[in-house]
Amino acid sequence: NAGVTQTPKFQVLKTGQSMTLQCAQDMNHEYMSWYRQDPGMGLRLIHYSVGAGITDQGEVPNGYNVSRSTTEDFPLRLLSAAPSQTSVYFCASRRDTLAYGYTFGSGTRLTVV
Amino acid sequence: GENVEQHPSTLSVQEGDSAVIKCTYSDSASNYFPWYKQELGKGPQLIIDIRSNVGEKKDQRIAVTLNKTAKHFSLHITETQPEDSAVYFCADSGTSGTYKYIFGTGTRLKVLA
Image 1: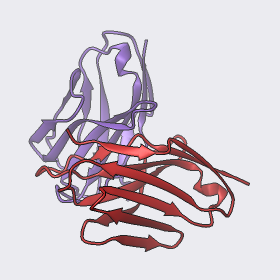
Image 2 (image 1 turned 60 degrees about the horizontal axis):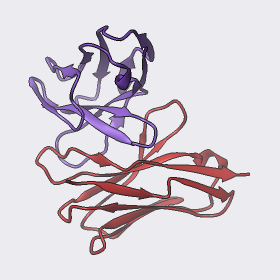
Image 3 (image 1 turned 120 degrees about the vertical axis):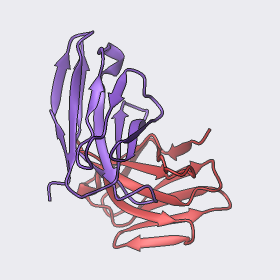
Image 4 (image 1 turned 135 degrees about the vertical axis):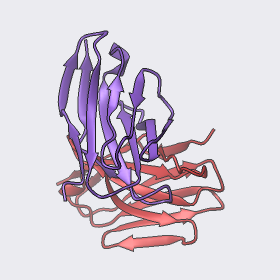
């Protein structure tokens, strides 16, 4: 099993550009999330989905959109990139909404200049 | 709101010694507490978890203890090895119906050979 696959691994954007971070999982997990990781701030939840067609906001949703058309895919869209969005982004999935551990992807390091 | 405090932020131990990392949570109704290990350039990986109906759980050199009265839980690593060097995150599953995990800010553990 590949687990959780994120692409790209690295990306540099100019301020104002848009892009989509891809996330796919092959474990048939219902619950998927996007986190950003910044130095000294741990992992902060951006958006999450409890199943295909259902998404909701996390702690820091501004500037990001998500959709969940299939169980496998959960892309994260940056609408108009800002330097404050420079971060490492992690996609994670878990079996369902009950308390189980996450499987994380390997991350996307994004720099906005 | 809910939060998780994690201490210390950095920890250096001699190879073979023990390491202890502590997290304090705020919501007494929380019932699931996972620990993640993040190696450089990789995504966090679940290493052990504990549910609120038990006080301790062990897996070889790793153990987690939970004190519900004091609302804290700790990760214990015995006989530390250089490969234990990483950043460790605790998390609190929260009590909302969708279990939006709250992560601690991380502890950088260095095991000195």
